[in-house]
Image 1: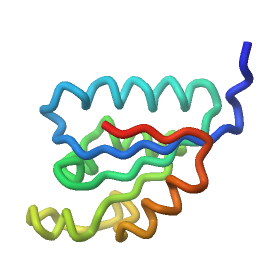
Image 2: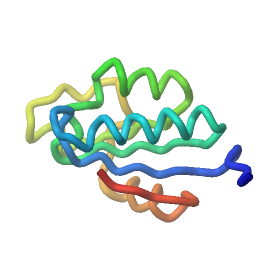
Image 3: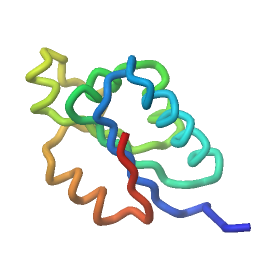
Amino acid sequence: MIELAGKKLGVLLTTAPSHPNFRPALALMTAALDAGVRVYLYCVDEGVRAVALPEIQALKNRGASLFGCAYGAHRRHIQVDDSAAWSGLTVLADVVGSTDRFVSF
């Protein structure tokens, strides 16, 4: 059995909550947190619409690092607040470069 505790998973969410990929992304991040994996979620494009959802905030409350694209939120008239660390794509580059695995939905 592979030991996952302490590993880092980066997730890029580009789809709206209504997209079929949203639920599998949630399931993957939940399973990762259950296994002791550090989860880094970056929401961009339509994915910024998910930041304030209870399901995403629950991941944050469990310890996931939650980032949102400030530009994407601005373009969609979404309030930038403390629901996520709102940033630019340099943070996404850091997530890609510093995680053990990186997936995109």
